[in-house]
Picture 1 (cartoon, rainbow, N blue to C red):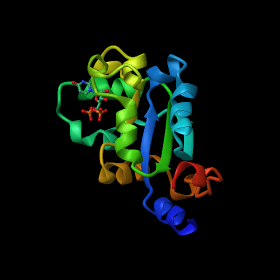
Picture 2: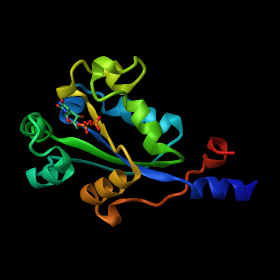
Picture 3: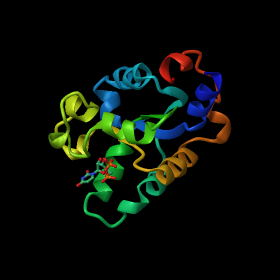
Picture 4: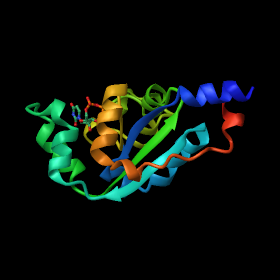
Length: 160
Ligand code: UDP
């Protein structure tokens, strides 16, 4: 019914998905966006940018002091990234499944990292790992007016 569709959409979440510089260089931006679109998720924000160091320091603050932290900042800061926000039911958890494991060697074929990556330090894509991380990351990377609230006309064919 119409109410169920509204309720489903109301249960929607948003997640932050970023195509890292290696994903851009490898020419898989379109493929990654296609996977999320094809799944039925709704694209609500998108931009390419050269991420400033301060932004990356905030984004990766939980890893400060770890041995991979400096190389990580250098890697993500080395070229433009494509920052996106996706909306849909369970998009945070399902988005992480679509990405695969942090280490591409442990990612199943069929996942983004399992299809395009080999090592952890070049793992193509980032995705928020929790509701609080998603909120925090969307707020870091996008101003509120950069996130579009639009109605997916296919919604009734995606949700029951
Ligand atoms: N990373 C790395 N070496 C490690 C662990 C992580 O280079 O041993 C990088 C990798 O790019 C990873 C990012 O740091 O995606 C953030 O690590 P996290 O454990 O949060 O993994 P994610 O949530 O991205 O899967």
